[in-house]
Every structure is written in structure tokens, then in C-alpha cells.
Image (tube, rainbow, N blue to C red):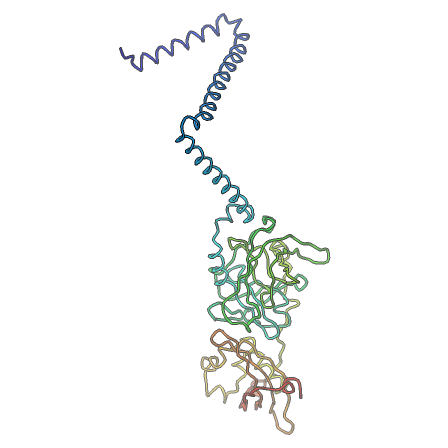
Length: 418
């Protein structure tokens, strides 16, 4: 006869009621019976559990020896278990080396491509380096990259170049910030606190070694984090790695496996490199000023020589509106702003070597200068010399007629002789 579930449930319920009645009544014995029942049934439970565990262990120990088939299965299982444990240990070590699971699963290839598309060249007349966007309209680099350069150029990976409208920095910390009129939100790199780095954690550094002398995309090198360095003599902390930075990479970013910036490329010394910590940069940010930034100082009303100097200084700084205003009425009547500007669209820099009045010739100026042009993603250098006839109009000297010719293969004396 089959017993229904309801009958079983009622029977169990009846047993529970009986046990509770015995436990509670008489009521004055309840405080004594309760701890005794708890201890008794705990011992009974543990005894039964131990008995079952022993049976299970004995069954497992004896099972492989019941047949050759069972023995073979046991050996295969142990081998698989050993392999899985080994894999887990190796994975744990790798995850630790990469700085945790969140960084372990970041794809290095994607990070490299992101860096190559985001890091920019910083080019001036006296120095070259690298930089990266810390906001949609601000590029960070080293101060020594733009030192003594009033109008560095920012060259994008696609070959386009622009001139910042303002520069701020901290010379002692070797940091500079280039401010742009246009916005590039897609190029901004995110910061990450360096104190989260683990020893031997992989890091990537990006930049343009040898500046414009080496054409092509940004170079990405890989190394590991060694330690955080600090000196009372320096206003910043440095991250030390086993990478080797070369000239031209200064100002580029140092990032973790996920592409988050932890430092700025600064210097390479004998098989190691130092990077300014992002934490130091954040602290020093409010101290950035234009006090030590080189500035263009010209006065085209002072003399014909100063006017010619001003004209080429404006071309150097890409201040095209001001340069166009220095054209005389006769000269500007033969062209327009767009056509005139297109003549100089490739010029990255202008370096003036000599400006002097021509003896016996009124308002005639002799000049020697060089240009650095960016053509097909490669720098070209040209040297020029000749004269400008100026005319005094609107209280300043302006450009009237030129007789400027390119100098092929100029000698050393051409640059530094009178």
C-alpha cells in the first residue's frame, strides 16, 4: 500500500510536536533540557557525518583497485587534476605579473594601436619630441622639448599639423602643456594612479625616436615596472623601468597593459629609463605658467630689418593674419590671404640666421634663413637668402618686393658667417 506525501508530512509533523512537548514541558526543566539537546544532537550529527565521510573515503580509496578499468580511470583523472592545478598556478602567476585580472584580459595589440593613433610629434626649431592628449584640447609633453621655442608644432599621425595658441609649463618639473583651439576628444588618454602598479608589471611607452629624422608611425616599446623613485632635489616622482628611451620619445606616454597613462617619458640612462609620475603631474598642474615660455618679440615699426624679422617670425609661429598685414598695399593687391597662406602651408619652422640693412640702399634688407617643411609625412630642409625691399606704410615697415633665392647645399660658413 502506497503512503501519500500528505500522510508522510503529517507523521513527521506529529513527531516534531512530540519532541517539542517533551523539550518544553514541564517548563521549569526547559532551560536545562535545551543545552543538553543541542549538545546531544550536535554530537549525533557529527558522528553520523564522520561515519559517512569515512565510508566515502574508503570507497574512493578502494574503488581504483576493484578492477583494472577503475584503476585506469583513476590514473587519467589524477593526471587531468594535476594539469588543471598546474594551469591554475601558472595563471595566478601571470595574473599577478600583469597587475590583476582587470589588466590581464586587456589586449596588448589594441593598446598599441590606440597609442599609435593618439601620440603626436612635437616639433620646434631647436628640439623635437613627443606628446599626448590629456584633455580634448590640451597636449602634455616635456618642457625641454619646447624650451626656447615660442611656436612648436603638433603633428598628428595622419600628417596634419597645428600650432598651439598658448603654452604653459613648469621648467623645474620638465613639464609643458600645449593648449589648442580645436578639440580632439577621441585622442584623449586616461590616467591611472602609479601606486596600483605591481613589481615586474608590463608597461608600454610610445613616442617618435629621433624625431622627424625617422619617418613613420609612433614606436611602442615594452618593458616592466621596477620601482617608484623620489629625491628631495626633484619636484617630481619617477617611475623606473627596464626600457631604453631614445631621443625624440621625450614627452610621450607610459601606459599599463590597458592603455591608461601612469607616467611621461623623460630620460633614458644605461639600460633603464625614468618617467615622471602622473601623480606628480596632477599635483603640479596648478603651478603651470607661461613665465619661462619663449615668446616672439618683434617691432615692425622700428626699422626695415625689424619688419623683415617680424614677417618671418609670424610665418614661423603660423600667425598668418599678422604676417599678411605686413604686406604692402602694392604687394597685397597682387594676391589674397588664401593664396598667400597656401604658399607656406607646409612650413613647420623658420630659423633666421642673418638680417641686416644693405648699405647705400634705402629700406633694403638682406636676410638668410632656413625652413623646415613637412611634406608627405617627412621633414624637408631648405636654405634661402636674398633681399626684401620695404616701404613705410600705416606707421610700420611693410614688405614691398622680394628677391629671395634658395641656396643649394649651404656650407658651414653660410650658417655662421657674416
